[in-house]
Amino acid sequence: MVRAATTRGAAARAVAGADTIEIKATLPDPRVRQALARFGLTASNDETRYIYFFDTPGLDLLRAGIIARARRVVGDAHDSTVKLRPVDPGDVPRKWHKFRDFKIEADASEADMVRSASFSMPVRKGLIKRVAGGRKPIAEIFSAEQEDFLMSMAGRAIDFAGLAVLGPLVAQRWEFVDPGCPWPITAELWKRGDGKRLMEVSIRAPAAQAAAAVGGFMAFLQEVGVERDESQQSKTRWALDYYVGKLTGARARPATRASSSPR
Image 1 (cartoon, rainbow, N blue to C red):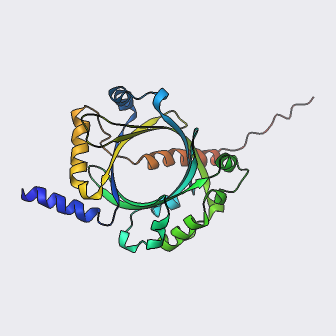
Image 2 (image 1 turned 180 degrees about the vertical axis):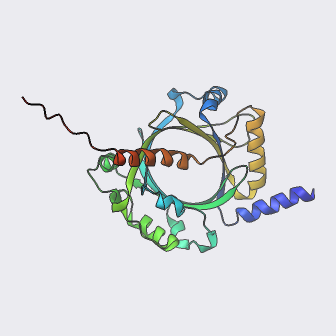
Image 3 (image 1 turned 90 degrees about the vertical axis):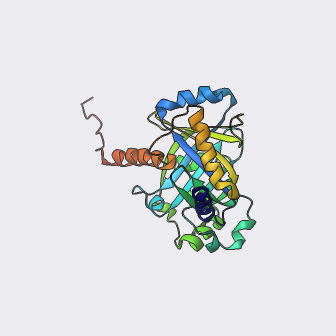
């Protein structure tokens, strides 16, 4: 009883100020097929997205706790997001809460719990493709409000001209319910340019349910036989490491000279 109370107390402190808690577990590529079959997920009932990240070749934004990304959703709206983690909710001015797609939540895994703030804004269709193709500057994807948010919270302005387009990842996303889990489940499958895949399954719950939700969701995954990635790697880092390696590798390769054979 004392141990349970201590766990609940620690969870309450970790999520203080967050609106919701999102509990995540990643599944490595060899376990993806098993999970798809177990939950009945197919390409015919998914939502397909193309996800682009923006960072320096040295991942300076990620190292500063900043994620900048854009999403093209097939048949639906497109958006851009800036995310900052960790944050102290008490340091976030109330003016940001007036935006519909601004949220403070606790990102949790079995071993960690970190509070984050994310701010999404709509992007007009066609713009993300033009930016990815180099026909428009990256700065056009992000709003002045998103830039002001980062300046006020992280104390820095993003030099968009110094960023690279990293991606796109092809993502399939499903939302479903399972009789063994009291919370709706979201599954997102990411595929990199090299064909490797990583799946994330997650639930959202009120912050007040943090301890019960973390323990309950992990127990559910174990009960249904879905094996988790023991390293609990971030799918964002998994994606960025690949695309940065691809970018720097391309820069390091010497240009191939055209043949100068006589005509």
